Amino acid sequence: MSIRYRLDSIQTSYDSRTVLDIGQLTLRAGRLYILTGANGAGKSTLLSHLALLTAPTSGEIVFEGETVLWSNSTLQRQRRDVTLVHQSPYLFTGSVAANVAYGLKLRGGHGDGLKQRVEEALALVGLAGFGHRRSRELSGGEAQRVALARALALETKVLLLDEPLANVDRNTSDLLENIISALPARGTTVVMTTHDPEHLERLKGERIHLAAGRLAAPQSFSTTSVEEGEIQPCRLSPKPATSFSIA
Ligand SMILES: Nc1ncnc2c1ncn2[C@@H]1O[C@H](COP(=O)(O)OP(=O)(O)OP(=O)(O)O)[C@@H](O)[C@H]1O
Image (cartoon, rainbow, N blue to C red):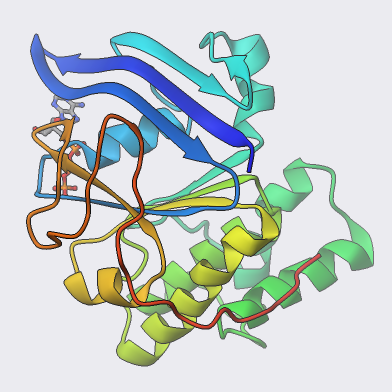
């Protein structure tokens, strides 16, 4: 599998306090990575770097074989391959369908093809028929699913999910877990954060654990060994992948 990211000697500081300090980390295509760590461990900071939204204070990120230079001319192109879904995603005023269509339109989507892609993405997250609903009238869990549909519709090479399962009920969580688990088989690199040990057990993924900004061996899974460099797979129970297509 090809390499999506290489992080080399990444340090990030705020007011001279170092909050992220990663020697080397490689993330590959078609893998699901589960990012864990206590509050303040640096997970969101790392996601923001991987989304190419913020630059580390020092160090190098190579994305798809190309060093990230943090200059507008190349960043815009590189960012098109990455989608970040925040824990409290922002939905625009208007319909659910307009929200899901937003990024697709920016990328030139239009007409029946666009409409079909929006409907398929909504169906994927269990919200078929929700297209006409007003985004402001959605529950928190529904809004989260719409944000995920918006991201899935883009079919980017990388999907970064900040606590995607935090505000949803068990049925929805099962549904979203199935979707997330199936993405790597399509070549997508998924990095998701969670604080919930149950998600860790159910999802088939490789764990990245941060402690005070550094890669560390997770405390609750003694079988997992995380080294600088390549992340070692931890023993998580496999889950049958759901096949789906939004192409
Ligand atoms: N813009 C900022 N200015 C100053 N400090 C910041 C800023 N953003 C993050 N930090 C600090 O960096 C550290 C890492 O924060 P980060 O949000 O990455 O942690 P996290 O692991 O995502 O935490 P949580 O699980 O609570 O979301 C924290 O100590 C935080 O206070």
